[in-house]
Length: 453
Image (cartoon, rainbow, N blue to C red; front, side, top):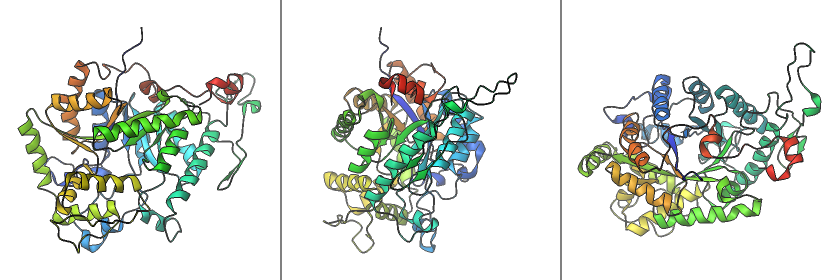
């Protein structure tokens, strides 16, 4: 008998929560970004609720409007741990939940990232995942010897080769290449070593990796770009895709379009899990949920919402009437093209003024926002899950720890009662949780080509 399909759940841990004003909330841990006890507590909470994974975003640099004298009110949470370091620490205080972090292919080298994620996979017993991004923060360039962010197309071309090199490095050794036989004195079998010897357009990497093959074969590959180039990269490489859509129709179109790309790369629909972001504000009643949301909205400083919107759109709006519409024409951005499109579509579809759109963006940062009772939020998630719009969700609590506590205490039991999420972990690795096959090592793929991933 085939087990019923269940939705995957990610817990997206933005330091104090995803609402722009979360750090100002009375219950917030204002120094959360550098408070390990805070992260350990929310990680354990998510694991107790049987989430599939924790997710940490990252940017390798502070945005100019995060720190200049005109933005002392903070548009983004600034000052937080480097995510791979944090994942390694969280691996020691959790035992089952997956551990996913962002690392850019634009401002890293393949060997370094392959080694770090392989290490985290070993430390955690097979729970690591890499969220591959090309960097949406243009100011990262100034920290790596560049005068400008590379063009969008170039970043994705680099990312494609980068991912191929990383996977080849993870395959540097066969699974049983290290017998470590004390009696014979044989530590490793050189015949089971396969250096990539990669010489491509952008990278030259001999290898092998100086760590055994990861427990999962490859840490789970995650991708979050929704532009045309991003979707193509996801179809070729990703096993989990984080995305943002506002309406059911938009979510269905993205889901269908991405899955239809997979056969071109010899892949099947069940090899990629699509997890849209959801920003849930939960209350025992609709009125209570709305009151929670209204309280947060009132904490948004006027300059913050506008600055965040300007960053998302890549244009200055301060010279325009705040209660007027967006300009008719907006130049295409060189950072997150898909998020810019989402913002423009939202404003035009709902006829939002600049002020109204700024408040919407500062709340859920462009993701799907649901304010309501546990039953209403479960209804909304179930509809998208059953109607071909999602394989699960990346849950973005408005505040931490409170927003995650609300979701775990009220929404998860409702989803569980409907048979939509697991009652307990059935496997030990992130691949087990997500129902993803473990890629065979190089020898196994040579013997059984159908097992290739």
